Length: 503
Image (tube, rainbow, N blue to C red; front, side, top):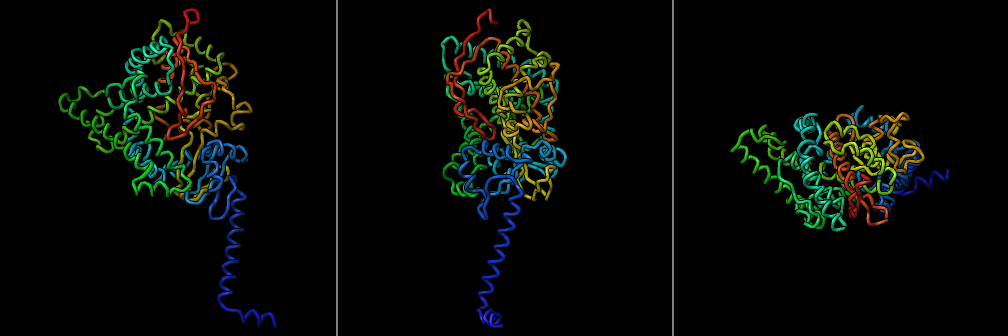
Protein backbone atom coordinates (compact mmCIF):
# COMPACT_ATOMS: atom_id res chain seq x y z
CA UNK A 1 0.00 0.00 0.00
CA UNK A 2 2.90 2.33 0.83
CA UNK A 3 4.45 1.67 -2.63
CA UNK A 4 1.26 2.72 -4.46
CA UNK A 5 0.96 5.86 -2.34
CA UNK A 6 4.60 6.74 -3.17
CA UNK A 7 3.99 6.24 -6.88
CA UNK A 8 0.89 8.42 -6.89
CA UNK A 9 2.78 11.13 -5.04
CA UNK A 10 5.26 11.49 -7.95
CA UNK A 11 5.04 14.45 -10.30
CA UNK A 12 3.04 13.98 -13.57
CA UNK A 13 6.12 14.74 -15.71
CA UNK A 14 7.75 11.57 -14.35
CA UNK A 15 5.02 9.41 -15.90
CA UNK A 16 5.34 11.28 -19.19
CA UNK A 17 9.10 10.64 -19.32
CA UNK A 18 8.64 7.01 -18.27
CA UNK A 19 6.05 6.46 -21.01
CA UNK A 20 8.29 8.07 -23.63
CA UNK A 21 11.23 5.90 -22.55
CA UNK A 22 9.21 2.69 -22.70
CA UNK A 23 7.81 3.64 -26.10
CA UNK A 24 11.28 4.40 -27.55
CA UNK A 25 12.61 1.15 -26.07
CA UNK A 26 9.79 -0.73 -27.79
CA UNK A 27 10.47 1.02 -31.12
CA UNK A 28 14.19 0.19 -30.94
CA UNK A 29 13.47 -3.48 -30.17
CA UNK A 30 11.03 -3.68 -33.08
CA UNK A 31 13.54 -1.96 -35.35
CA UNK A 32 16.33 -4.38 -34.53
CA UNK A 33 13.93 -7.31 -34.86
CA UNK A 34 12.96 -6.15 -38.36
CA UNK A 35 16.55 -5.40 -39.43
CA UNK A 36 17.79 -8.74 -38.14
CA UNK A 37 15.55 -10.46 -40.69
CA UNK A 38 17.09 -8.51 -43.59
CA UNK A 39 20.54 -9.14 -45.02
CA UNK A 40 22.72 -6.11 -45.39
CA UNK A 41 25.35 -3.95 -43.69
CA UNK A 42 25.47 -3.27 -39.92
CA UNK A 43 22.54 -0.95 -39.23
CA UNK A 44 21.71 1.24 -36.22
CA UNK A 45 18.72 3.33 -35.14
CA UNK A 46 18.34 6.74 -36.81
CA UNK A 47 21.65 6.71 -38.75
CA UNK A 48 21.09 3.26 -40.30
CA UNK A 49 24.22 2.02 -42.09
CA UNK A 50 25.60 5.52 -42.67
CA UNK A 51 28.92 4.70 -40.97
CA UNK A 52 29.53 1.56 -43.04
CA UNK A 53 28.38 3.29 -46.21
CA UNK A 54 30.77 6.17 -45.63
CA UNK A 55 33.69 3.82 -44.92
CA UNK A 56 33.03 1.88 -48.13
CA UNK A 57 32.07 4.82 -50.32
CA UNK A 58 35.20 4.38 -52.44
CA UNK A 59 34.40 0.69 -53.11
CA UNK A 60 30.61 0.48 -53.16
CA UNK A 61 30.52 -2.07 -56.01
CA UNK A 62 32.72 -4.60 -54.24
CA UNK A 63 31.14 -3.90 -50.85
CA UNK A 64 27.65 -4.58 -52.20
CA UNK A 65 28.96 -7.67 -54.01
CA UNK A 66 30.46 -9.07 -50.81
CA UNK A 67 27.22 -8.48 -48.91
CA UNK A 68 25.15 -10.07 -51.66
CA UNK A 69 27.39 -13.13 -51.82
CA UNK A 70 26.73 -13.73 -48.10
CA UNK A 71 22.98 -13.28 -48.46
CA UNK A 72 20.90 -16.44 -48.84
CA UNK A 73 18.49 -14.63 -51.17
CA UNK A 74 21.20 -12.62 -53.01
CA UNK A 75 19.32 -9.49 -51.90
CA UNK A 76 20.27 -6.88 -49.30
CA UNK A 77 18.50 -3.92 -47.71
CA UNK A 78 20.46 -0.70 -47.26
CA UNK A 79 18.95 1.92 -44.95
CA UNK A 80 20.91 5.03 -44.05
CA UNK A 81 20.19 8.47 -42.69
CA UNK A 82 19.70 11.09 -45.39
CA UNK A 83 18.88 8.63 -48.18
CA UNK A 84 15.99 6.54 -49.43
CA UNK A 85 15.73 2.93 -48.27
CA UNK A 86 17.40 0.84 -50.97
CA UNK A 87 17.01 -2.80 -51.89
CA UNK A 88 19.92 -4.19 -53.93
CA UNK A 89 19.44 -7.53 -55.65
CA UNK A 90 21.48 -10.00 -57.68
CA UNK A 91 18.60 -12.47 -57.78
CA UNK A 92 17.39 -13.17 -61.38
CA UNK A 93 13.84 -13.88 -60.17
CA UNK A 94 13.69 -10.44 -58.55
CA UNK A 95 15.16 -8.81 -61.65
CA UNK A 96 12.52 -10.43 -63.85
CA UNK A 97 9.79 -9.32 -61.46
CA UNK A 98 11.00 -5.71 -61.55
CA UNK A 99 11.72 -5.45 -65.27
CA UNK A 100 8.87 -7.54 -66.63
CA UNK A 101 6.31 -9.25 -64.36
CA UNK A 102 5.36 -6.16 -62.33
CA UNK A 103 6.97 -3.57 -64.61
CA UNK A 104 4.38 -0.87 -63.88
CA UNK A 105 5.22 -0.81 -60.17
CA UNK A 106 8.91 -0.16 -60.81
CA UNK A 107 9.37 2.97 -62.94
CA UNK A 108 12.55 5.00 -62.74
CA UNK A 109 10.67 7.37 -60.46
CA UNK A 110 11.10 10.99 -59.43
CA UNK A 111 14.16 10.43 -57.17
CA UNK A 112 16.02 9.05 -60.19
CA UNK A 113 14.88 11.77 -62.57
CA UNK A 114 15.80 14.45 -60.01
CA UNK A 115 19.39 13.24 -59.92
CA UNK A 116 19.81 13.10 -63.70
CA UNK A 117 17.25 15.71 -64.68
CA UNK A 118 19.70 18.59 -65.07
CA UNK A 119 21.83 16.60 -67.51
CA UNK A 120 19.41 14.29 -69.35
CA UNK A 121 16.27 16.40 -68.96
CA UNK A 122 13.27 14.60 -70.41
CA UNK A 123 15.36 12.28 -72.60
CA UNK A 124 14.39 8.63 -73.08
CA UNK A 125 16.63 7.31 -70.28
CA UNK A 126 15.20 9.69 -67.70
CA UNK A 127 11.43 9.49 -68.20
CA UNK A 128 8.57 7.08 -67.58
CA UNK A 129 5.07 6.51 -68.85
CA UNK A 130 3.71 7.99 -72.06
CA UNK A 131 6.72 10.25 -72.72
CA UNK A 132 9.03 7.23 -72.56
CA UNK A 133 6.77 5.17 -74.85
CA UNK A 134 6.56 8.02 -77.36
CA UNK A 135 10.33 8.45 -77.53
CA UNK A 136 10.87 4.72 -77.80
CA UNK A 137 8.62 4.62 -80.87
CA UNK A 138 10.42 7.60 -82.38
CA UNK A 139 13.85 5.97 -82.21
CA UNK A 140 12.84 2.37 -82.94
CA UNK A 141 13.15 2.96 -86.71
CA UNK A 142 16.90 3.48 -86.30
CA UNK A 143 17.33 -0.08 -85.07
CA UNK A 144 15.31 -2.01 -87.67
CA UNK A 145 17.12 -4.70 -89.67
CA UNK A 146 17.29 -2.50 -92.77
CA UNK A 147 18.67 0.44 -90.80
CA UNK A 148 21.32 -1.80 -89.23
CA UNK A 149 22.40 -3.07 -92.65
CA UNK A 150 22.75 0.51 -93.85
CA UNK A 151 24.71 1.31 -90.68
CA UNK A 152 27.21 -1.47 -91.45
CA UNK A 153 27.46 -0.62 -95.14
CA UNK A 154 28.02 3.11 -94.75
CA UNK A 155 28.80 4.47 -91.28
CA UNK A 156 30.84 1.57 -89.88
CA UNK A 157 32.80 0.98 -93.06
CA UNK A 158 33.63 4.66 -93.48
CA UNK A 159 34.68 5.29 -89.88
CA UNK A 160 36.68 2.10 -89.40
CA UNK A 161 38.28 1.62 -92.81
CA UNK A 162 38.94 5.29 -93.62
CA UNK A 163 39.54 6.75 -90.16
CA UNK A 164 40.36 4.28 -87.37
CA UNK A 165 42.67 1.85 -89.18
CA UNK A 166 44.82 4.59 -90.78
CA UNK A 167 45.24 6.19 -87.33
CA UNK A 168 46.32 2.84 -85.86
CA UNK A 169 48.71 2.38 -88.78
CA UNK A 170 50.33 5.72 -88.01
CA UNK A 171 50.55 4.95 -84.29
CA UNK A 172 52.17 1.57 -85.05
CA UNK A 173 54.76 3.10 -87.38
CA UNK A 174 55.81 5.62 -84.72
CA UNK A 175 55.75 3.03 -81.86
CA UNK A 176 53.58 5.58 -80.10
CA UNK A 177 51.72 4.88 -76.85
CA UNK A 178 48.03 5.66 -77.27
CA UNK A 179 45.01 5.62 -74.95
CA UNK A 180 42.84 3.01 -76.64
CA UNK A 181 39.79 3.88 -74.56
CA UNK A 182 39.90 7.53 -75.67
CA UNK A 183 40.40 6.51 -79.29
CA UNK A 184 37.41 4.15 -79.16
CA UNK A 185 35.35 6.84 -77.41
CA UNK A 186 36.02 9.27 -80.24
CA UNK A 187 35.14 6.62 -82.79
CA UNK A 188 31.87 5.76 -81.02
CA UNK A 189 31.07 9.46 -80.69
CA UNK A 190 31.53 9.92 -84.44
CA UNK A 191 29.25 7.01 -85.26
CA UNK A 192 26.41 7.96 -82.94
CA UNK A 193 26.57 11.57 -84.14
CA UNK A 194 26.34 10.43 -87.75
CA UNK A 195 23.39 8.14 -87.10
CA UNK A 196 21.40 10.42 -84.79
CA UNK A 197 22.47 13.96 -85.69
CA UNK A 198 23.80 13.58 -89.21
CA UNK A 199 26.90 15.71 -88.41
CA UNK A 200 30.50 15.36 -89.50
CA UNK A 201 33.09 13.51 -87.45
CA UNK A 202 35.54 14.84 -84.88
CA UNK A 203 39.27 14.09 -85.24
CA UNK A 204 40.50 10.61 -84.27
CA UNK A 205 44.14 11.70 -84.26
CA UNK A 206 45.29 10.94 -80.68
CA UNK A 207 47.71 13.87 -80.78
CA UNK A 208 44.82 16.31 -81.10
CA UNK A 209 43.16 17.45 -77.86
CA UNK A 210 39.77 16.08 -76.93
CA UNK A 211 37.00 18.40 -78.17
CA UNK A 212 35.33 20.58 -75.49
CA UNK A 213 32.08 18.72 -76.04
CA UNK A 214 33.66 15.38 -75.08
CA UNK A 215 35.14 16.89 -71.93
CA UNK A 216 31.76 18.43 -71.06
CA UNK A 217 30.01 15.06 -71.49
CA UNK A 218 32.57 13.40 -69.22
CA UNK A 219 32.21 16.10 -66.58
CA UNK A 220 28.39 16.07 -66.62
CA UNK A 221 28.26 12.28 -66.51
CA UNK A 222 30.69 11.99 -63.60
CA UNK A 223 29.13 14.66 -61.38
CA UNK A 224 25.57 13.47 -62.06
CA UNK A 225 26.54 9.92 -61.10
CA UNK A 226 28.29 11.05 -57.92
CA UNK A 227 25.10 12.74 -56.75
CA UNK A 228 23.58 9.30 -56.16
CA UNK A 229 26.59 8.13 -54.13
CA UNK A 230 26.61 11.07 -51.69
CA UNK A 231 26.25 9.84 -48.07
CA UNK A 232 23.68 12.61 -47.54
CA UNK A 233 21.53 13.53 -50.55
CA UNK A 234 21.05 17.07 -49.26
CA UNK A 235 24.73 17.83 -49.91
CA UNK A 236 24.44 18.11 -53.69
CA UNK A 237 21.12 19.95 -53.44
CA UNK A 238 22.61 22.59 -51.18
CA UNK A 239 25.64 22.96 -53.47
CA UNK A 240 23.32 23.33 -56.45
CA UNK A 241 21.24 25.98 -54.67
CA UNK A 242 24.41 27.91 -53.77
CA UNK A 243 25.95 27.35 -57.22
CA UNK A 244 29.30 26.17 -55.85
CA UNK A 245 31.82 23.35 -56.27
CA UNK A 246 30.92 20.33 -58.36
CA UNK A 247 27.39 21.61 -58.98
CA UNK A 248 28.80 24.78 -60.55
CA UNK A 249 31.02 22.66 -62.81
CA UNK A 250 28.03 20.49 -63.69
CA UNK A 251 25.98 23.53 -64.67
CA UNK A 252 28.79 24.80 -66.92
CA UNK A 253 29.29 21.39 -68.55
CA UNK A 254 25.57 20.99 -69.26
CA UNK A 255 25.52 24.44 -70.84
CA UNK A 256 28.30 23.38 -73.26
CA UNK A 257 26.47 20.16 -74.18
CA UNK A 258 23.12 21.86 -74.70
CA UNK A 259 24.57 24.70 -76.76
CA UNK A 260 26.26 22.16 -79.06
CA UNK A 261 23.11 20.11 -79.60
CA UNK A 262 20.83 23.15 -79.95
CA UNK A 263 23.17 24.65 -82.57
CA UNK A 264 23.01 21.41 -84.58
CA UNK A 265 19.22 21.34 -84.31
CA UNK A 266 19.04 24.94 -85.55
CA UNK A 267 21.41 24.21 -88.47
CA UNK A 268 19.44 21.12 -89.39
CA UNK A 269 16.18 23.09 -89.43
CA UNK A 270 17.72 25.64 -91.80
CA UNK A 271 18.96 22.88 -94.07
CA UNK A 272 15.57 21.18 -94.11
CA UNK A 273 13.88 24.45 -95.01
CA UNK A 274 16.20 24.79 -98.00
CA UNK A 275 16.27 21.19 -99.23
CA UNK A 276 13.10 19.67 -97.78
CA UNK A 277 12.71 15.97 -97.04
CA UNK A 278 15.37 14.95 -99.57
CA UNK A 279 18.07 15.31 -96.90
CA UNK A 280 16.08 13.39 -94.27
CA UNK A 281 18.62 10.59 -93.67
CA UNK A 282 19.11 10.81 -89.90
CA UNK A 283 17.02 10.64 -86.74
CA UNK A 284 17.28 14.35 -86.02
CA UNK A 285 15.82 15.28 -89.42
CA UNK A 286 12.91 12.91 -88.93
CA UNK A 287 12.16 14.32 -85.49
CA UNK A 288 12.19 17.90 -86.78
CA UNK A 289 9.98 17.06 -89.74
CA UNK A 290 7.65 15.21 -87.37
CA UNK A 291 7.08 18.42 -85.43
CA UNK A 292 8.51 17.17 -82.13
CA UNK A 293 9.09 19.68 -79.33
CA UNK A 294 12.53 21.32 -79.39
CA UNK A 295 13.31 20.43 -75.78
CA UNK A 296 12.32 16.79 -76.27
CA UNK A 297 14.53 16.57 -79.36
CA UNK A 298 17.48 18.13 -77.54
CA UNK A 299 17.21 15.87 -74.50
CA UNK A 300 16.68 12.76 -76.60
CA UNK A 301 19.81 13.55 -78.64
CA UNK A 302 21.87 14.07 -75.49
CA UNK A 303 20.71 10.73 -74.08
CA UNK A 304 21.52 8.88 -77.30
CA UNK A 305 24.96 10.45 -77.61
CA UNK A 306 25.82 9.58 -74.01
CA UNK A 307 24.71 5.97 -74.36
CA UNK A 308 26.15 5.40 -77.82
CA UNK A 309 29.49 7.01 -77.01
CA UNK A 310 30.35 5.51 -73.64
CA UNK A 311 28.90 2.01 -73.45
CA UNK A 312 30.43 0.37 -76.54
CA UNK A 313 33.81 2.06 -76.12
CA UNK A 314 34.04 0.86 -72.50
CA UNK A 315 33.04 -2.71 -73.41
CA UNK A 316 35.63 -2.88 -76.22
CA UNK A 317 38.35 -1.41 -74.01
CA UNK A 318 37.86 -4.09 -71.35
CA UNK A 319 37.74 -6.79 -74.01
CA UNK A 320 41.10 -5.75 -75.50
CA UNK A 321 42.64 -5.79 -72.03
CA UNK A 322 41.17 -9.21 -71.22
CA UNK A 323 42.33 -10.87 -74.45
CA UNK A 324 45.80 -9.38 -73.93
CA UNK A 325 45.83 -11.38 -70.67
CA UNK A 326 44.61 -14.50 -72.49
CA UNK A 327 46.76 -14.91 -75.64
CA UNK A 328 45.29 -18.32 -76.46
CA UNK A 329 41.82 -16.78 -76.76
CA UNK A 330 43.25 -13.95 -78.85
CA UNK A 331 44.67 -16.50 -81.31
CA UNK A 332 41.30 -18.23 -81.56
CA UNK A 333 39.66 -14.88 -82.32
CA UNK A 334 42.20 -14.15 -85.04
CA UNK A 335 41.45 -17.52 -86.63
CA UNK A 336 37.73 -16.77 -86.54
CA UNK A 337 38.20 -13.42 -88.26
CA UNK A 338 40.54 -14.85 -90.93
CA UNK A 339 37.63 -15.99 -93.07
CA UNK A 340 36.76 -12.35 -93.67
CA UNK A 341 40.08 -11.68 -95.39
CA UNK A 342 39.33 -10.81 -98.97
CA UNK A 343 35.64 -10.53 -98.15
CA UNK A 344 33.66 -7.62 -96.89
CA UNK A 345 32.43 -7.51 -93.32
CA UNK A 346 28.70 -7.20 -93.76
CA UNK A 347 25.59 -7.57 -91.63
CA UNK A 348 25.34 -11.33 -92.22
CA UNK A 349 29.03 -12.21 -91.84
CA UNK A 350 29.20 -10.37 -88.51
CA UNK A 351 26.57 -12.75 -87.13
CA UNK A 352 28.95 -15.63 -87.81
CA UNK A 353 31.56 -14.31 -85.39
CA UNK A 354 30.24 -16.46 -82.56
CA UNK A 355 33.41 -16.61 -80.47
CA UNK A 356 33.79 -12.85 -80.66
CA UNK A 357 30.17 -12.50 -79.57
CA UNK A 358 30.87 -14.79 -76.59
CA UNK A 359 34.01 -12.81 -75.69
CA UNK A 360 32.03 -9.58 -75.68
CA UNK A 361 29.37 -11.13 -73.42
CA UNK A 362 32.01 -12.50 -71.07
CA UNK A 363 33.78 -9.15 -70.94
CA UNK A 364 30.51 -7.36 -70.13
CA UNK A 365 29.65 -9.98 -67.49
CA UNK A 366 32.79 -9.02 -65.58
CA UNK A 367 32.81 -5.32 -66.51
CA UNK A 368 29.28 -4.24 -67.47
CA UNK A 369 28.95 -0.82 -69.16
CA UNK A 370 26.15 -0.05 -66.68
CA UNK A 371 27.10 -1.42 -63.27
CA UNK A 372 23.68 -0.96 -61.65
CA UNK A 373 20.27 0.47 -62.41
CA UNK A 374 17.54 1.61 -60.03
CA UNK A 375 13.77 1.78 -60.06
CA UNK A 376 11.41 3.19 -57.41
CA UNK A 377 8.39 1.30 -56.14
CA UNK A 378 5.03 2.98 -56.60
CA UNK A 379 3.18 0.90 -53.99
CA UNK A 380 4.10 -1.69 -51.36
CA UNK A 381 5.20 -4.95 -52.94
CA UNK A 382 6.86 -8.29 -52.26
CA UNK A 383 9.77 -9.59 -54.34
CA UNK A 384 9.80 -13.28 -55.32
CA UNK A 385 12.52 -14.05 -52.75
CA UNK A 386 10.28 -12.72 -49.96
CA UNK A 387 11.89 -9.30 -49.55
CA UNK A 388 9.21 -6.72 -48.67
CA UNK A 389 9.24 -3.49 -50.68
CA UNK A 390 7.75 -0.28 -49.34
CA UNK A 391 6.25 2.42 -51.53
CA UNK A 392 9.04 4.83 -52.48
CA UNK A 393 11.87 2.33 -51.95
CA UNK A 394 14.72 2.39 -54.41
CA UNK A 395 15.08 -1.11 -55.87
CA UNK A 396 18.40 -1.68 -57.63
CA UNK A 397 19.35 -4.61 -59.82
CA UNK A 398 23.09 -5.05 -59.96
CA UNK A 399 24.75 -6.47 -63.13
CA UNK A 400 28.26 -5.97 -61.72
CA UNK A 401 27.49 -8.07 -58.66
CA UNK A 402 25.46 -10.62 -60.63
CA UNK A 403 28.48 -11.32 -62.83
CA UNK A 404 30.42 -12.21 -59.69
CA UNK A 405 27.92 -14.54 -58.03
CA UNK A 406 29.18 -18.13 -57.70
CA UNK A 407 25.55 -19.25 -57.51
CA UNK A 408 24.97 -17.91 -61.04
CA UNK A 409 28.28 -18.57 -62.83
CA UNK A 410 30.07 -21.25 -60.82
CA UNK A 411 33.27 -21.32 -58.80
CA UNK A 412 35.27 -20.03 -61.76
CA UNK A 413 33.17 -16.86 -62.07
CA UNK A 414 36.34 -14.73 -61.78
CA UNK A 415 37.85 -16.24 -64.95
CA UNK A 416 37.52 -14.78 -68.43
CA UNK A 417 35.97 -17.87 -69.99
CA UNK A 418 34.10 -17.31 -73.28
CA UNK A 419 33.32 -21.03 -73.51
CA UNK A 420 30.71 -20.63 -70.77
CA UNK A 421 28.56 -18.99 -73.49
CA UNK A 422 28.51 -22.20 -75.56
CA UNK A 423 26.69 -25.52 -75.15
CA UNK A 424 28.65 -28.76 -75.07
CA UNK A 425 28.05 -29.23 -78.79
CA UNK A 426 29.62 -25.87 -79.56
CA UNK A 427 26.41 -24.01 -80.26
CA UNK A 428 25.83 -20.60 -78.65
CA UNK A 429 24.01 -20.94 -75.32
CA UNK A 430 20.86 -18.95 -74.66
CA UNK A 431 21.36 -17.15 -71.34
CA UNK A 432 18.40 -15.76 -69.43
CA UNK A 433 18.38 -11.94 -69.84
CA UNK A 434 17.45 -11.59 -66.17
CA UNK A 435 20.64 -13.43 -65.21
CA UNK A 436 22.63 -11.19 -67.57
CA UNK A 437 20.72 -7.87 -67.61
CA UNK A 438 23.52 -5.81 -69.16
CA UNK A 439 21.07 -4.40 -71.73
CA UNK A 440 18.15 -4.39 -69.27
CA UNK A 441 15.28 -6.71 -70.19
CA UNK A 442 11.50 -6.68 -70.48
CA UNK A 443 9.69 -3.63 -71.94
CA UNK A 444 12.71 -1.34 -71.42
CA UNK A 445 15.27 -3.63 -73.03
CA UNK A 446 17.88 -1.56 -74.86
CA UNK A 447 16.76 -0.80 -78.41
CA UNK A 448 20.38 -0.42 -79.47
CA UNK A 449 21.51 -3.86 -78.29
CA UNK A 450 21.94 -5.37 -81.75
CA UNK A 451 23.54 -2.21 -83.13
CA UNK A 452 26.00 -2.24 -80.22
CA UNK A 453 27.03 -5.84 -80.90
CA UNK A 454 27.37 -5.19 -84.64
CA UNK A 455 29.48 -2.11 -84.02
CA UNK A 456 31.73 -3.81 -81.47
CA UNK A 457 32.22 -6.91 -83.62
CA UNK A 458 33.12 -4.86 -86.69
CA UNK A 459 35.61 -2.69 -84.82
CA UNK A 460 37.26 -5.48 -82.79
CA UNK A 461 37.49 -7.88 -85.78
CA UNK A 462 38.97 -5.15 -87.99
CA UNK A 463 41.61 -4.26 -85.39
CA UNK A 464 42.54 -7.85 -84.48
CA UNK A 465 42.93 -8.87 -88.11
CA UNK A 466 45.65 -6.25 -88.69
CA UNK A 467 47.07 -5.19 -85.33
CA UNK A 468 48.29 -6.49 -81.99
CA UNK A 469 47.22 -4.41 -78.97
CA UNK A 470 49.78 -4.45 -76.11
CA UNK A 471 48.97 -2.73 -72.79
CA UNK A 472 52.03 -0.91 -71.46
CA UNK A 473 51.17 -1.29 -67.76
CA UNK A 474 51.11 -4.68 -66.01
CA UNK A 475 48.77 -3.36 -63.32
CA UNK A 476 45.15 -4.42 -62.99
CA UNK A 477 42.96 -1.61 -64.40
CA UNK A 478 40.37 0.00 -62.13
CA UNK A 479 36.68 -0.26 -62.96
CA UNK A 480 35.07 3.16 -62.55
CA UNK A 481 31.24 3.16 -62.32
CA UNK A 482 29.59 6.41 -63.35
CA UNK A 483 26.40 6.77 -65.43
CA UNK A 484 28.23 4.38 -67.71
CA UNK A 485 31.29 2.58 -66.42
CA UNK A 486 34.78 2.92 -67.85
CA UNK A 487 38.42 2.08 -67.19
CA UNK A 488 39.90 4.67 -64.83
CA UNK A 489 42.80 6.46 -66.49
CA UNK A 490 42.15 4.80 -69.84
CA UNK A 491 44.08 1.92 -71.43
CA UNK A 492 47.56 2.93 -72.60
CA UNK A 493 48.76 0.56 -75.31
CA UNK A 494 51.35 0.00 -78.02
CA UNK A 495 50.01 -0.99 -81.43
CA UNK A 496 51.93 -3.39 -83.70
CA UNK A 497 51.09 -4.71 -87.14
CA UNK A 498 50.71 -8.46 -87.33
CA UNK A 499 53.28 -10.03 -89.62
CA UNK A 500 52.08 -11.55 -92.87
CA UNK A 501 52.52 -15.17 -91.70
CA UNK A 502 50.49 -14.73 -88.50
CA UNK A 503 47.68 -13.26 -90.58
